[in-house]
Amino acid sequence: MLPPLTVAALRADFPLIDALTALQPLGWFNPRIAPTEVALGDVGLTVDDVLDASARLARFAPYLAKVFPETQASNGIIESPIVPLPAMQAALKVASGKIWLKQDSHLPISGSIKARGGIYEVLKHAETLAFDAGLLKTGDDYSLLASDALKAFFGQHAIAVGSTGNLGLSIGIMSAQLGFRASVHMSSDARQWKKDKLRAHGVTVVEYALDYSVVVEAGRKQAQGATSCHFVDDENSHDLFLGYAVAGERLKRQFDAAGVLVDVEHPLFVYLPCGVGGGPGGVAFVVKATTDNKTRAAKDVRSAFAEFGGNLASPGAVAFQFLHAGQFLIAKEKTSEDALMEIALEAGADDVLTSADGFELRCNIHAFDKLAHALEFKGIKPDSAEIAYIPVNTVPVTDADVARTIVKLHDALEELDDVQHVFSNDEMDEATSAAAHG
Image (cartoon, rainbow, N blue to C red):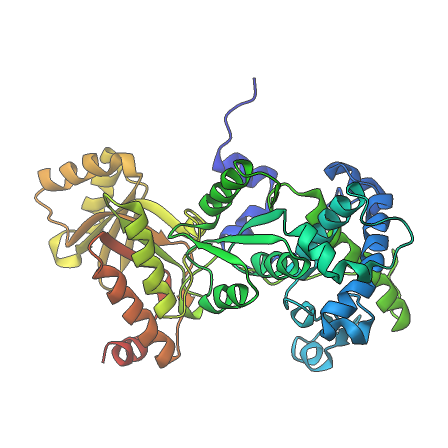
C-alpha cells in the first residue's frame, strides 16, 4: 500500500512545485513527449483521422466560399495567417530563434480558435446526414448544400451546445447557415454581444444564471430528450479535437512557405495565453459567502467582478494562490514574541511572524479554536482572529487607477448580502493605498 501523499513528499519528488507555488515564471519540458503518430493513440485517434478531417474541410470549401464571402479570399478554407513579431522579440530579449504570432483572432466566420473544431463538427454531422439520406454523394460539388432543398432537409434536425461564448458562436452560426434548428445554452459569464449576434443569425439562445459546467450538463440533458438533435460535447468530442488538429498540418505548410525549419534541432514552442478569472491588475480574489440561494449569490458576485473588469473563476481556481489558515493579529504592546512562541508550541500553531505592526500567528484551521482559547487563557486579546485566505505571494499594485478599481471591487463585493469576507493578494504602498481610498 502506498504511503499517503504529503506536501513534503511531493516537493521532494517534484522540485518544480516550489517554483509553481511561488508563482515564478517556469519552463517545464515533458520528458514523455512523443511523436504525433504515437501521441494521438492516447485519445483514440490516428494520423489518418486528421488527414481525413483535412480532406473533409477541403470538400466543404466551395460551400463555405459561397455562403461566407469573407472566406472567398482563401477559397473557402478557414485559416489564419502567421506573422513575425520582431518588436516583441526585441522587448523580450530573445536572441535565438524567431517569435511568430498565429492570428486565430482573425479566423473568418466567428473570429476565434473555436471556428476550427466547432465548425468542423457541424460540417461533418451535416455530411453524414446528407449522405445517409442520399442527398449527397462522393464527387459532388458541396456548394449544393446551400440549396433550399438541403436547407429544408437540415431544418428537420437540431444541433445544440453549451458554451460561454466562442464555441457557441461557431456552432450556432454554422448550424443556422446550413438550416439546422440551432440552440446555444449559454452560461452567465457569456457576453451580451455574442448572444445578440447568435440571435441575429436565427439561433435560439438559452440563458442560465449558472456557470459553464452546469450549462453543458443542462444542454446535454435537453438534447438527449429531443428527437433528431445532435449535441456538441465540448468535454468529450473527437470531432472537435480533429477540427483543431487540422491546424497543425496547415501550420507546417505555412512554416514551409515562410522558410521556417522545424525539426529535432529546431523545436517549435507554442505559447497559449489563457486565464481562469480574477480581478483587475492580475489580482486574485477569494470571496467567502453564506447563502440560501446559490444562484443569486453567484450572479451577484459575477456582476460585481464584471462591473470592475474582472472575471469570476470556477470554484477553487485561484485557491492555490492562498493559504487557508487560522490567522491571529496581535499588537506588540499586548505581549512579547517569547510569550507567543510558548503559546504557539503548546496550542499547535504553525508559525509566529513578527513585523513592525505586531505579531501574526497562523495555524491549521482545525487548530483555530484551541489556539483562540490558549490566547484567551493567557489574557491576550487579538486585534483580529479569523479563518482567512492568506496570499502565498502578493501582486504589487502601483497604478493609482488600478488600485482604485480594486478598492471599489472590494467594496462592491463586501456590500453584497451573501458575502461575509473578501480576500485578495494585492499589495499597495502607502501612497498608492491613500490614492485608492481618497
